[in-house]
Image 1 (spheres, helix red, strand yellow):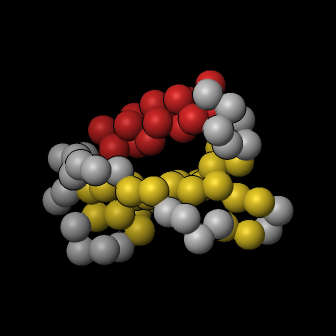
Image 2 (cartoon, one colour):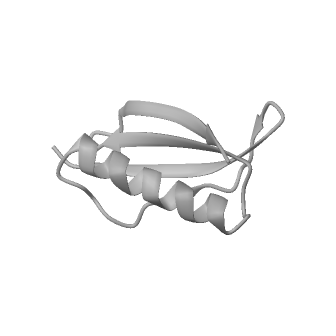
Amino acid sequence: MQYRFEYGEIEGETYLVLVNHGQEWYSSESLCRMEIDSTIRSICDAGQGTNIWWKIYNENGNVVQQGNKQC
């Protein structure tokens, strides 16, 4: 099974419409999660976000993990 992620900014109770997709498929959930953590860390370090939501999808389109990270 392959996995990819998407993420975006949360403002208040609203998930912003702009969604960013990871460009690659990963061979495991854990690899995908590591890439999410790295991506969010970069966003936070650059001051480009405050509360980031993320989801991991498998190749069937099912959400297998989700969460959010506050900078």
